Length: 316
Image 1: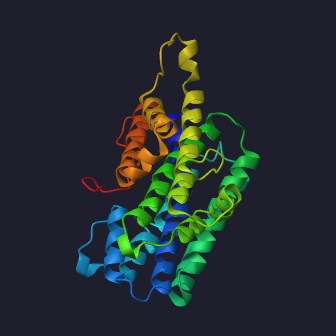
Image 2 (image 1 turned 90 degrees about the vertical axis):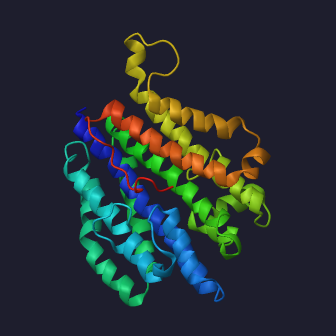
Image 3 (image 1 turned 180 degrees about the vertical axis):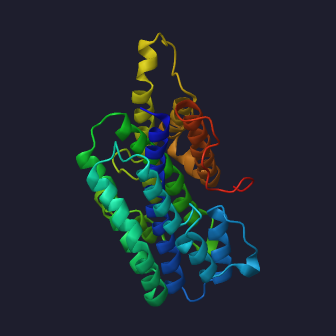
């Protein structure tokens, strides 16, 4: 496969997942402000912008700044609108390996964004969040139903998996690092679609340690950090399998595979209590793992150019 097409597929997966997860994070943030009239809105907005890699002075942080930066910005790939637009542009360069249904879904989503922005500004942002979650699920559902499980599929799912690890870590950070202004664990579980699976697994009230454990370590819930790392590792193993046939017989052949494998092994074999005791540090490590793995994937599989990053250098 041409490296240009492989790179486009990788970033389609990342951008669509980024839009979905950013919508989920903003939904939690908005609900916190509505439910708790005593919350310090300015500090909550400042903390969220910092968590998402957007530097902003405390006195300039407010809900309008958050939505303008993380939801409506048409250029920045860290915003919902910018990520979906970037996904559509990457799809233009990979039309020959994408099904017509996926292209049509991305195109329709992109064309509906101006109307969605208008409705969100007029009636509130919840309609935009719901629209983004539904359209992202449609894109990946169509990919699941219409793409052959070849290299095209592997690069798409690899991008989605790495982005999911990063963004689920950020969702957990919104709860762990916000102190008294943090959203409830029930709200965090609902935002990730994990509330009902959590209840079926633990059959009891939401417990903070168990909720964090579920979102980090559960093997069966697809949005958990461990499940996403495991899927990314599987994609990399398939993509690098040709190296075994070419004579590579020791260890893993790619740096990205090594980085992801180390992170997955850390979660699998480190004690749960030890992970939770230093949870902010572990979450930061996972975000840096995703950045390093993305750079390694770019160096190994794509054209010789700087990887596309969305967190400004020197932040995080």
